[in-house]
Image (cartoon, rainbow, N blue to C red):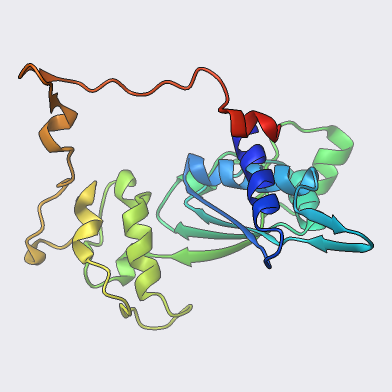
Length: 233
């Protein structure tokens, strides 16, 4: 959190002479964190820039892919008050966007009463607008797939590429490779000859050291905030 907020501050200061917008995106858990980060930025007014008598509010937008619900109805309303715009992209066969909030969610008529009067703790609400996609509408994909495939980011990006509106024919408009769908799942039709789960690290991530031995490379460790990060905290 501190790194995100400090970096936003730094970038706003660095590009102070330009017209700015803040866009955050994420998939699954990353989508939830994207919404929380956007709320954080707006609530702390990091997107409000004052220059003499002039005050500018930088728009904050989230593109959420297959994200779960994050907060309750009050959280949703507060995001709207702060002007945070959220576009959620989901596959209707994916279970992740339906949780948490099986008992009470934004579709429940009396959600506000339950939260305010009863302080019900298991009440959740989605934020923003929603685009519902269906992998069964793509002629490139199998109709049936496991839950992991329905939740897969590459599948969602493929579906977005062919989506032209509710009820309209699926038609790919970019040169995005359909083989990417099977990078970490098995949803492409067999006639396209793309093996499932084809993505893997070269040599399983092993590297050859100077003495000729194959080893797992040591990852850099961040023991403390870098100087430029600490400066903006």
